[in-house]
Length: 272
Length: 147
Image (cartoon, rainbow over all chains, first blue to last red; front, side):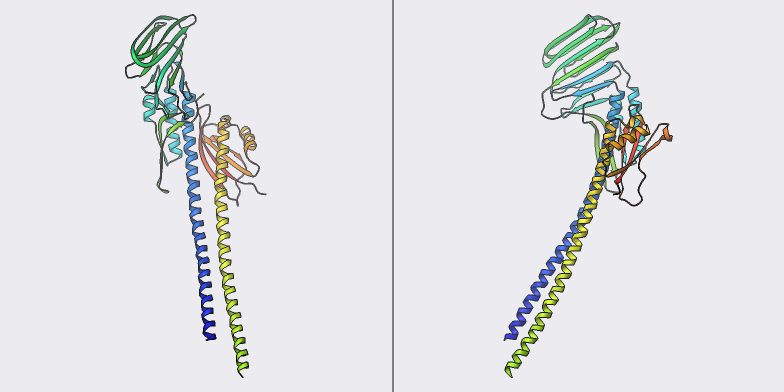
């Protein structure tokens, strides 16, 4: 009887210690599997970091090309957007540089595809997150309609005398315009709120200057006369940081790693 | 007689117990060696991966800083080398290769230390535009300095 009891005890000890060892071995196997998974995640992290670095540097290159070659200065805060530009000025240099950069980058990095057609068509820049869209031509600035816009302050400093100034307007809207065209002591001013439409025609040194606010809320400034132009667009104050976006798309398509990314060129900072 | 039998049984049981305990001890020793070895390789492996990522971030940040400071615009070897020496942390070494459409060095400038033969090396690529609108392709290599 004593022998039987001792045998049962021994069997109990053997089984329980064996189970304990098995548990510890399984734990070791779990550690190894976890290590492999961490290793592959680190590889992915490094890969994504490389792509992110390349993408941000490509975006910066296009943003730098715009700020250095366009002759257009943009800045923004949480309630206004300021556009400064010496009109008229040709955007051909900008177009050439943008096309060259597209070609160079695609040649150097086969996994990147860049599309610049939309930008080259209308040279548009959008202020995010409000989506205030502005477009630029050689002698024109267009601000597309946006319900957040409350006021336009337009300042034109001419290099020739103002021959005529004819502002007309239609009330019943919600936009305010303050316009000031100046050459030395001669100026043309217009200031009115709650506008639905406005039309300011000037003749400067026999060249036409036209500022139009149409019924959709689109503002356009067109001038063949030399002018240092400043347009300050006031909008409803927002709590977020603003940034500019160009409609130049970057696609990174790496089939080896099954990775695809699509983005547009952002200016995360003011161009001043 | 019975007393002798009892003493004999006790002696046999003691031997059995001793062998059994020894058996279990050796088994536990083997198990713990396996655990400790796996833990060692796990921690060493993750250290290497984290330090690679850290190296990559440092390299990327240095290029970004130099680009923001418009250092590459000069395309001058000494200027870029001095700036690199200023921003690079003391524990690291770096090589930057600048390629573009410029006449210096037939469109290639290399600044920094020679590539090591037996150290972990991280590389990355970026692009930049100088203030003269020259497109640059920047390739950087970074590694830890030998102690």
